[in-house]
Amino acid sequence: MPGALVRTLGVLGCLATALPARALDKQGSAHGGDVSTSDEFNVSGGLTLGPALYNPTYAARPDNTGKTLFRYALHADVDLIGPKLSVPIDLNAFTDRERKGAKKLLPSEFDVIAGLSTTWPAGPGAIEFGSRIENDRPVDRAGAKQTYVDARGRYLYSLAAVWPGLKNALSNGDVSGAAGAGWFIYNPSYYARPDNTGRALLRYMLHGELSLWDDLFSVGLDGTFFTDKDKNAVAPSELDLTPEIIFHKSRYELHIAYERDMPVDRGGLVQHWVYSAFVVTFDLRDDVMPPLEKRGYFVSP
Image (cartoon, rainbow, N blue to C red):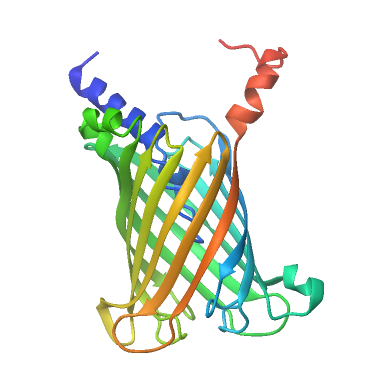
């Protein structure tokens, strides 16, 4: 086997096992940042449920009313040709703690995000391109909606892929993440600041994660900048910053995170909260196909 091919497969192996990138933003990264060489059809993702632990200002609707109490979420990647052609889908629901009684548990906002993505090996990592459409709307009353269509690219990295000794030093861990940018191709109503002013034009994204002890424990940091089409197309108008700690075992994860969305080009509303989230991941190939194969429904060539 040629040396270049061996190195490429080695890098993909490190990324597939050490780049979960499970940050809890509303748009789950395609395959959680995972890269594989499979061309097979598959459906994978995760279900999320989590309450606010402290929330002075994080709104429960797109028009900045209410205070979020619970978040329910689903992320799924429908692989048509493995990661070479996938359909990422994100569904998010938020509830309002200011509603009365059991209504605190019912959704006050529902966000739908879907698109296409493609991921390919590139140097010591991989590159992901894609486009998504998002619609955020209140569901318990009339109110403002936010909608856009974007295009984005991200480079996925794993230091263990280029520095093998790091994996042993971190007890089968890694330092991994992604960096990228996006362009809001069509944006009639997606804002450039937490106080719902301006219209977003560009998005700059950075994710980093330190994992230890076979990915049992991780520390992650997400940063996302937005720019304002109506004021300055390039300079940031908003920064969303989310540090978190993650406990991960098998298909189960527990996240404790702090999200802070703030304007950076002027004063204004800052939305922030501390929340926890319990995540259960799923994978059609791992969860369904092997048992069926064992029962003789499929015969390997």
